Image 1 (tube, rainbow, N blue to C red):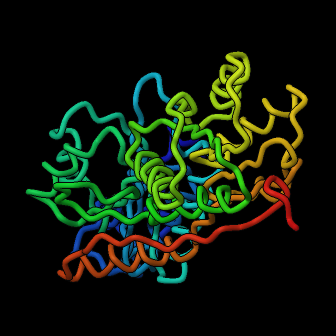
Image 2 (cartoon, helix red, strand yellow):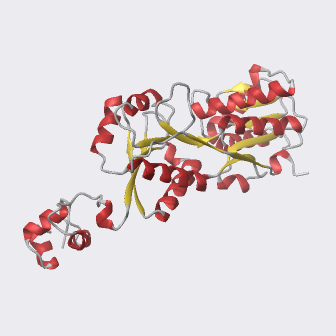
Length: 338
């Protein structure tokens, strides 16, 4: 049967129940038992019947439902398209599966705090996870005044009223920069968009590592770059064209660091002989680049488990607290393995 011709009467005949029962089942009425609901929803899907696509958790057999919201902004690339966020989504999905949870994913471009409030009020999920923080911090603060069953991936910011989970960006930035300093590098470029809270914290770690080592920073080596290979390559090309001397690069993400490597390679610079490079995230691609990329690893499996457990606990009335996850330095060829 085609989706535009299947009727309630058809579903009722296949299911062996009344039309009224089918209608109630599809609307998740308490007047219909869960077994019948599951059977009706299964038949409706098999017959391509047009109905609300998200099955309530109890009907699907899941213990709970988590909604993953990916905010988008005009003119900015969708974060879900980056390798890091794809791996984070995978970690959350794995953790949800282990906890018998359904995961729903949606994209939105909120223009105001009212938009976020509407998302929460219209969402029937037990918990909501927002994948992205940078442009919505104040809106999340306002939302937290009326709804607390959500958390955000990102840094912990001054005056923050909502729960966030993310890596310890400050210590991660210090760890990356300290490694370069320990290699004898003294003119280390930083590539990243410090308007993004996580990047700002990594940059603060970069500054702190220099301060502790007693090494002065040349501010001309602080160069804006988005989370894109092309943006980072252009940023480093600009440094090279200006004739600025540097012997290390800390990319605020692996994609940024890989863009730097591409620029350096095309300019004939030897890595790590001339310039050592460190990234951040430890995406799968980092191990297979040429040279392989030294980076700061975030445990996305643990991140997924923490996020899911906090949301499920919140659905039971437990207050959520922000949490910073530890990082680890992964040394590869871009800094020398010796």
